[in-house]
Length: 162
Image (tube, rainbow, N blue to C red; front, side, top):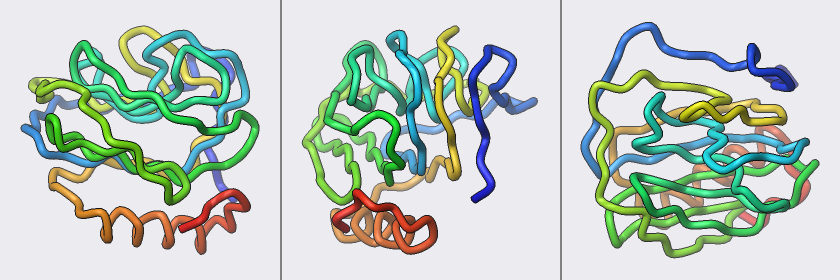
């Protein structure tokens, strides 16, 4: 499978223009973490850490963040995961391999931000990314399940239960 393999600071991608998106929005990704991560190491997010989804500061965890508050949930290191994060204030969800966790990552929008892949707010993601994106839309539980199912079929993810 074609992937972005990120093992050094030079391994990230950054958009050349800025964009702004108000809540709700949805992060999507298929990724595998392979190294110890500092806080705010984004799979996909913004250059000023206004909003991102990626590795948590602890092992075997992923985080959804929009502002100063993040929500963590379990995601085994060294394994591929289908990830979907709806950012919509107190009605937010982090979906990992078909299992949803309620989230309240803050009401932060992202404005005048560059979109980053593999990097957020000065912190490098360590791992591989096969798919990433940001949808400027809300998603229902059924839609997030369908996204996970499609990611699972495309990438043959062994741990996904969607």
